[in-house]
Image (cartoon, rainbow, N blue to C red; front, side):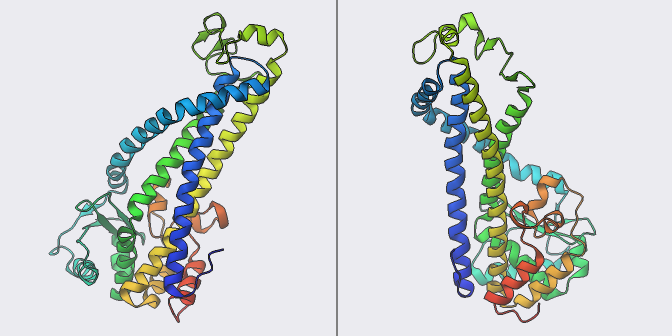
Length: 345
């Protein structure tokens, strides 16, 4: 799917994949909402068909409000994220006088593409790694570790800076924050479902005998207008149990799929940033040499949830396929060799 021909085709194919993955997040949000409403409807009793119909009616009434609530959650997390990244990594800003070669290399790359200069930061750790962050112009940051500066040659360091600058050019710094927040919404409700499971009795928001707003006597009327106790006496409890089990399964599956989408989006953007580095520097071999050195010592002392934002995630490199935040170094080298004309593999 999306067969790429040459560097430009490789870039375009990855952009299309990213758009489709983001569309998948939006679709999953609607699935999550319906699943939650299905659980809610089940606590009012009735047959399985009545419960599904009630959830469907409520879905069309409530999805605008739910999307607004998700947007508020998103905005708060979006603007808090960059601060959390800086605090977690311990990166500190440096000036031209403090790191002239590094600063000049980044500035020259920006000038070559007419881009504003992001802030330059250094992480005082011996590991070899780097990341880009920022949500808007004037707030963009490129950070590299002390180990990277001390180990890489000038052209290799330039290739890494070009990789991170490409993340900014492609708006990946915003895109990956969006992906993390989306996945966080599914993780929140998935965790809520797991914690709410009262083995062996099933799932209930407060207790087995209480409805969503209190005791059964307080919530005897369902959305369809029938009495919940009457429905139970009519044998509707089996339909409620089935609806809850199906809804919980859908929520947990959506949680897993959202995580896989986030990983796939991250892998796609790393390929794009590698291609962008080759395009900026016209030296894909330098990036390959840099990646080979980075893979030997990429582990940073940062929270595990932050590792996906770096040029290399050593944990991901040991996990293949769908469950990796980064492509393997071998796959990245192969892509550079195939699409960017690198000769050193």
